[in-house]
Length: 381
Ligand code: DCP
Ligand code: MG
Image 1 (cartoon, protein in one colour):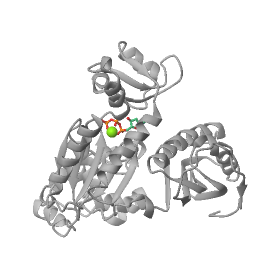
Image 2 (image 1 turned 120 degrees about the horizontal axis):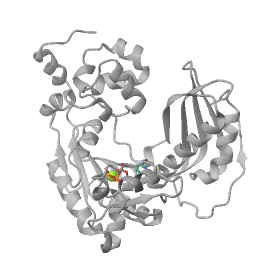
Image 3 (image 1 turned 90 degrees about the vertical axis):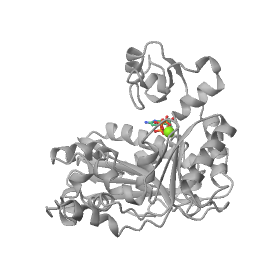
Image 4 (image 1 turned 60 degrees about the vertical axis):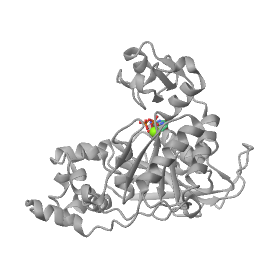
């Protein structure tokens, strides 16, 4: 530990941070559920759950704030949600509608800047350091965008404004729904110091547990560790945590057309050796990646599987298709094939990831015809 104790030293860390940029993170409130309530006034003010039906093995995609009061949340088994909130109305998702609204709000964002990076159907980063209308205050821009979203879609969004992506994202989540939270450079140190570690970018449930075991509960606890200790404890991600604990996050807002790949990975709650289980986890990852790809209106010619074994060695396997794809239904056989080309199963696995790359940007095809793979050994091996 580097033994940081005095408050002055603590504040000094933040003094050299680059705070020139103005970043906004926008996140729609209870997105799918809010759309359902908007389109059916009978549902206003009632607990609404969008997701799989309770008698199936489905899960909650999202729920209205009325349902959240009962303890219902995303990813909860629908059966359990029905038990704790018996009067809830269950509805299946209507993706085409959500997608249309998503494009609508993205068009609004582009009135202010072309530096728009969608993270999913309902959230995006905007770099408004220089914005098209020339509004000097980023807070003002965020306020205007929230109002426009409400006027044009009838929905509410929450916004976070700060000088980097990490802080903007945490801020948008700070006072939901209909929130607007600004974290000024001067406030960042105190804000991060008190922030629960689970709210940090990239800290999933597994890392969160690990940090709790180490006695790291809030941002301030991270400051006790040197860069080297962070790397020893958390690998490459440790470097990132080291920086964001100090208010440093230089990642640029990366618009679609600059993006080279898009994917997701997940560290498993425990190492597994059962391939069937791995495939079902990859299926979930695949649906999340599919949503991100669709939100960004992207399709890829290449799919890469990442496998990290229990001993932390990592391999990737790629496959390329003639026709660009993004749907899990289309790539399911390839996922299986890619997994078969690793040692997963014989060796236990601690992390799985799926990434599309090699994008096609023009007209997204509408037929669902499966293309034949070519160059199966291309990409990383
Ligand atoms: N979603 C999903 N499965 C999850 C999480 C989210 O299908 N595990 C979908 C449904 C959400 C949408 O993505 O409506 C946006 O996700 P958010 O995490 O932003 O959740 P909400 O917008 O629903 O609520 P909040 O007001 O907390 O942002
Ligand atoms: Mg949301």
